[in-house]
Length: 240
Image 1 (cartoon, rainbow, N blue to C red):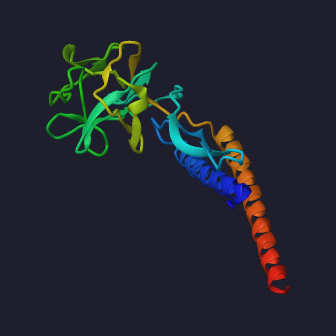
Image 2: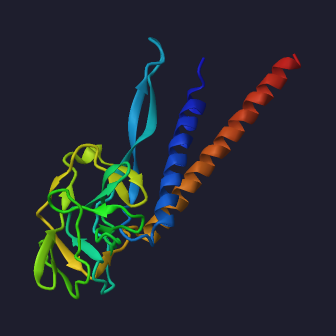
């Protein structure tokens, strides 16, 4: 016979451990510009334990949700620091494919391409790299993403959103794999000289970490007591 209480607790512990790891990752990135908080989604899985037995309900932590709440904006006055006000993402080209990101700190490469700190190129509204002419004295950015050098328009930085939000997954750090090609987004504006901070609320995350850890510890205590109960029963049977 299956010990349903132990099985249910073990299943719960596995889900709580995933949530602890997720919350810890959020806390570690609360100072990372452009970071998006992530949460765990629990789903119910019902197991048939037999014709004469009640069903067993298990909770699976098999889903993740990305918090799209706007982070606070920090002024840097950098010519190539951009922040999105409203929904949407920048699109950058990486060796592993195009990625969506809210991190908007860029610099011109030696070839004049606007790139992220690791060299990933910022893409314009048409999906091509954004070039800045060498020797430009003044760089200006319009709210619609039009980038100008010395008063002459040179590119329009693209704003994008996932065509299907359910296919978007975290790729690495502050970047997301859209899953399917993203679509343009016209419901936001871009600010020059600002960067968006992480949208992690440290107080809420630390409070959540304490709650989840306590729940995990209670589950561990139950399993320890259940293990001791089973061992005691086995010893008693062996002495008969």
